[in-house]
Length: 624
Image (cartoon, rainbow, N blue to C red; front, side, top):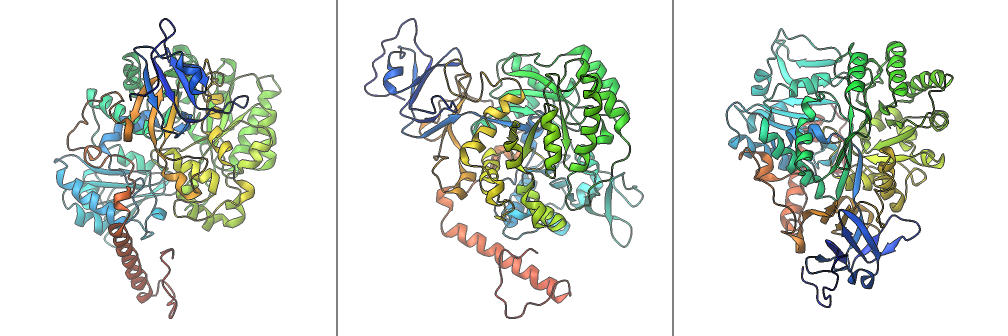
């Protein structure tokens, strides 16, 4: 953008990029505010006033006027399934941010019409029935009506999936198909599958069914990953820690990001983990990987960070809050072998642990090894999730040198958690303030893409407000954090989990030039609007990787979405209500959804499934 009043004068010391006229939150407590910065060779060289960067403007310097907008360090999602998400992104119809089920079904119907034979329409995570005005899931009948012949798979968190008739057939389910361990195929009176799959409580039935759908190959996987990274850049993300996960084999499923990194085509820094995929083979896998790679192998764009989020399958608890807490069998023997192997070889790790009961058992193993000098040893390790962790367990984590990573899973599963455990437990799920008060590193993330949305601002809103996507208050003020603390959890704290805190998460000379210029001022916008913030300009390593609004066209060009029938090619990713949609039509749409919800309530009353609240005005927030 041409900027009047700046005359190129630098020669040898010219910056490659200058951003001026900004309200910069640096994240540096010694110099918290600034209005301009200069970038050279991918790192920040100057932070200060406009006059401080003027001398670094040369003939080839790209100068961007932030127009008084808020700038922050680039966001870092500390728990994101970015590698797996990228391989599938362009095949998925995203309901992230969709306000009504009516709109979601309309999108599904339209997508089914353009999807070629043999392909599926899949809605995979990032949404919850709580966000819809109708407050319910789609029915099998609705999916059949929207797509009579095209297989449709709709995943709802790690709780359930809804399949239409064509998807049941494509998945190979029939009267004789046995229920897998920990899952249920719901059946009708005739014994045939209805199209509902339940995690009871394990989610294997859900993602093993999804794995039967066609996948991308070769160059299409690269294009899909690059578009997913651009979508993450759209929200100001410049880094992520990949938590690995099921159906993510190493090295096969990592080859796409490795090739993109070699070509200099990553727009997001990724620190990745390795997750043993086969029960009973975990120790062999970990031993093999230790011989192949070491933590911090790679570079500033792609690097190994350790093992996890599972080390052994038997030690994993599931977070389906519609089901009772899973009772785990004896797992300590193999789990101890895995932890010992990692600690003796200098590997860090992360552990999926939803419940304090699991965390206490894990800590007992660590304390046994601590007696041998293996904890604390300098290896970075952490618990993920930790919704019900107790104060006593937090003290033990601190004593053993651990850290924590929390995600906004209760943005999407809050009502289920509240129903099962009550308001008292929900108020402390997770106990973020208690974690911080102990001086623990507490990083924040989303756990996208199959549970929460990848939009980090929804998670930041949850941290600050304590509210779910259905606007239900779960955490009181005593267990919320202020905006500055929440932002640190999404920047500097994530860098601490990868050992990069000296170069990432802060805007000061010598640090990575990772930043975002925001659509709204995060620090002053009304609290409900935090979830709707986006980036207008995202810079990673000095490269403009996303540009919108006045800056449109400054970012790097991407190849077209492939295949051309992709839902992303037509609908994009995260769905937001643009200002021109926020008027009469939006009100009408919400009104239609609420009316439909009332019809559903009356249907249940007529069948005796609900008491008839005669004379009571209908509440659109009524939980159907």
